Length: 284
Image (tube, rainbow, N blue to C red; front, side, top):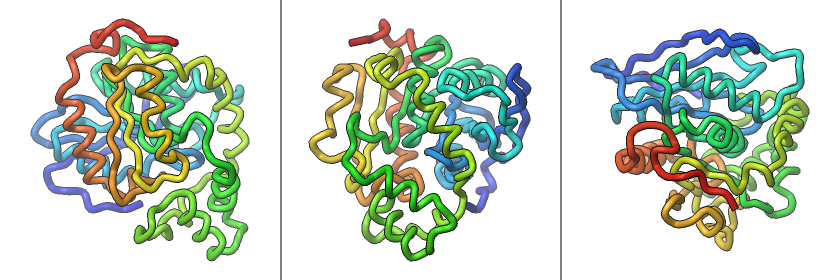
């Protein structure tokens, strides 16, 4: 996606070298000084350029925004070995240590929240907070995965893909056509395997850092009866729930200004330091 870079925002890219290969990181920050670090992690089969409007809005609000391109996307190396959530979480931490001052809030959109949650589990000292944006319910309704497969498949007719994008990702009245582009279906199998290691039961019940659960009001992956699912599991003191109006599963691109405002207001209430500074590790 494209967005005009405001004059007050510094926009650049840097390569972070790790033992698993290089990570291509997009950076947006205020020109008058770097504020608290935020890492944005995109949804399944999509890269971090989806976050252009959100990243620039957060930078205008005074944050240093880091967007590591997922493995195999942009200039980020795709390792020969099998990817896991542990390995993807390590990429996030390597980015935070290299460019974020050693501690950051992690914002995971849809599949990206798997990585953010595992990073918080594996490396709590580097995670000030976790924002899950458009996270599906623990058990989401039937048909959503099938809509994802059709919507992300460029060999399917555009009209069919748009219908499934509207069904599973965009609220009525929001234009889904921008998401006809930007998919990486060649990496679908790689990331589906990665998403199973560790198993969801291992990390779903663990939260070291405070957590903001941002939900689209019209998100079919997160039905109304599941609104308080994470809060009930992890506790109201640790989990804040906020619903974004006129948004579905793609809320970070549907409502970037509202999402940025919600994140910034919640971050202003966080203690300084890593995730354990906010309280003891929580597991059920």
